[in-house]
Image (cartoon, rainbow, N blue to C red):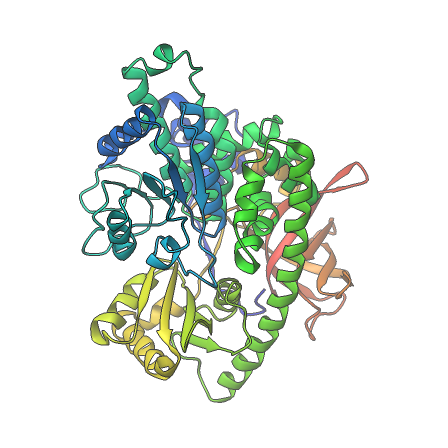
Length: 578
């Protein structure tokens, strides 16, 4: 939360009257501001999804999988250690088994031992007497040149599925499915890894249909809709832009979960998070479900998360979900300590003058699995790119970078690599997030090179944060029915931001909530005296706040449920004195 003179920019709502009159006016204005001009702009129906054959490499990929089915190959899925990787892996296992492939297992790198993706170090852990015939990477592999080469030396074929940006050269895999590889004509480039995996499966099902595979093998043809709970979770968790395709996949997946048709692992995570499946929102996936799943990969081993998502037993899924919940509690404790360290570092930097255009932060005791979260939190506070480092192996530092709109962080790292080719041992990622490895001795050199790249590439105006707002609401619009209508218009997320409004209110009362007294609850009233409740999570009372003063807030309309009662509550994310 920032307490500042807010630079509010209102979104334009031109043409909102053209949307269906059956939609509430506020919903029409909000959707119009996000580029929705017709009802059809919102979602694809399942049968209208873009065709899988538009992905280059799909033909080679499904032919390879057909060969695996025909010859009863042993297949190993190589997953990533985040929620997108876990859902991708679980989806691949469930989907390929449903197509008839039975000899299938997975391997997921431990970030503290193997690093990211398909690497020779990971392959060294495979049983040399029982190697798979085929490796399938999910949510990784597009930069795994050495890993693919070693797999070939060991006699394995490789199918890469990924969504990360490709480098100048692609690995020599038998097939690559990635909408972001060069010359790919697939029109929607924002698929998460789990979305790419989903497309591989629907491409394979289409191919097997043409071969009359299911009839010839007396096999029930799987329904692709059954997989969309996993796709919804992985897509939201990976914070990819919710374009029309991703919105559609998430929307259908959420509907499945609400109908009680989600897999047992997702249901168990919902339960331990204290949420209700019947009313689950995309924000619940992002802030309650995904963190518990991610905790396994951050703190221990994502194999536990994949085990959960492939478990068809409610009883054992519940046990595993409780374990993940405990791990997530540990993660929160570690993260809070790291945030306290970073706060002290920022205070020292501020004393030295204006903050640089990008920050590089390092502490020898920071946890490698939590530096991404830390970089994101600090980025939100200072509104500039942040790279947080933790100790790796043998004099190495592992870094996690997070960026702001207008600064493509992977391109910045590529600029550093081109000017200082010996500094970055490894790096990869996309516009808003990246990972990297450097030598500890090169930290100061990297920091200077990072600052130089930002100075050369980015104008100063980029660092002036503009707070988007859907406008000021009339007092008559501050209603529970509007909060519910906006929830119904979801999913909201990256690139299709949840509606936020701004306005001036008078503080009637305030108090701090929570064990740590770190949630600020406000009783407000409008200029004409209408009362409304608001809360700012994770925020203590600023010194200037007092009763009967006017404040400006940016907020979301939310539904507060307590003891069976549903009431309107404003969720504050920005606050300043009026």
